[in-house]
Amino acid sequence: MATGRTHRPATRSRGIPEATVARLPLYLRALTALSERSVPTVSSEELAAAAGVNSAKLRKDFSYLGSYGTRGVGYDVEYLVYQISRELGLTQDWPVVIVGIGNLGAALANYGGFASRGFRVAALIDADPAMAGKPVAGIPVQHTDDLEKIIKDNGVSIGVIATPAGAAQQVCDRLVAAGVTSILNFAPTVLSVPDGVDVRKVDLSIELQILAFHEQRKAGEETAAGDGALTAAAPRGAAADHSADQGPDGDVPAVMPA
Amino acid sequence: MATGRTHRPATRSRGIPEATVARLPLYLRALTALSERSVPTVSSEELAAAAGVNSAKLRKDFSYLGSYGTRGVGYDVEYLVYQISRELGLTQDWPVVIVGIGNLGAALANYGGFASRGFRVAALIDADPAMAGKPVAGIPVQHTDDLEKIIKDNGVSIGVIATPAGAAQQVCDRLVAAGVTSILNFAPTVLSVPDGVDVRKVDLSIELQILAFHEQRKAGEETAAGDGALTAAAPRGAAADHSADQGPDGDVPAVMPA
DNA sequence: AACTGTGAAGATCTTCACAGCA
DNA sequence: TGCTGTGAAGATCTTCACAGTT
Figure 1: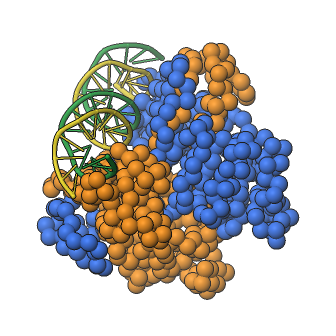
Figure 2 (figure 1 turned 90 degrees about the horizontal axis):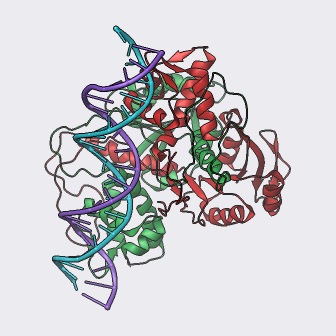
């Protein structure tokens, strides 16, 4: 997952760790909630609790953005909201297209948190001619034939793919060819994209499988020691070694930048 | 994101790294596709390409499961499918409940990849009395009042929360109290759960914000150097230093095991 | 006194590169 | 010869613990 290549070989500095970037939205959400409650300042401890991380990590994360806190006091909520928003590029408007308006696409189109943070659903696109013109979430669905024109007319650089797996790569290729450089993929397929295009994927099935793994471990909790074949039949002969196991814990990847 | 504590202090061994666990479903998907095309064996190189990772990583990942390949040849597809399935706990059936049958919940209920891999939608639950009895994806929606009974009757240990943010924590508490120990959360909130319960979250808005961050970087590609305030107004005075920046790349967290 | 910012230690993950086996 | 399996090096991320600042 990731071709491991650096975009800008030069000017190494201001390199915010990817792990930190992934947490900024979390902090932003917590801060926004505080802001709505008119809380003026927060300590790293409080904010960390609200965001579900530990405070040392939060402080380290913020240290990459600059020194935005005040020792002995904490962080100014409004100020931090602004700084993080700017860092994430949310002070500008991002037109987004959603391709594939099935159940999921419709759910995404209706998702409120969308518009709230700099994102605007510029268009909905589907391959079914019967859908064309029908409004979903107040936006008329357009046909795939016009994909390129829609992307260009709206200056879209972020595309969301919610099509069936079979259509995803083709849609992806067309989006990229039309100028999209960031893709959020909900289809259960590995998309291949040229260098410079970022792909993030969201896959329900994968998440469930990871949960199942840990769930299974919990079940065999203190039933360690023996670990023979339990269900079904294994093709081929002998397996390798097996012993006890370990509990879950730890975080996990989810991107695949180009 | 994680309370960082190890489930099983004892028996350290057979500890498959979390990063590896997160990739197993990816390999499994690629292998299943090969299996359907009746391909008998694959090399780490080929399989890695299909899964979108590099081959060294894949080999290392498999080495944690055991020695399932044959030097000079590759891996037996069927055998690997079985071994990974077993490792992930997919040789057994996992009844799942989905709470919150709005657009998203319905999309999830209809999601095919669900049933295909050991998961079975045991029940759909919604707080709206008007929904009760209505079939979604062929399954009648039940009312939240019966949540505890449904969980227990079906022996459910995995719950999916697709409710609005405001209801998520409450639903979570009830699920946990009724015996659920793994939760997939689609609501944009941090859930707090007792020790021993795993939570994974899927948040569209967060994914988009991460993409926006990278997108912004691309835009200012070779426009480095100056970096003044562009939009909106920043509350409070001076900011910290600013210089050039770096391109994206790398993977990122998404879990919060209890 | 309270809380941030950060070097340094530790843990985890990735990649290299090659020994070892079919 | 071809490809797996894996020690070891390197990169990244997390956590500690405390100096520094208000």
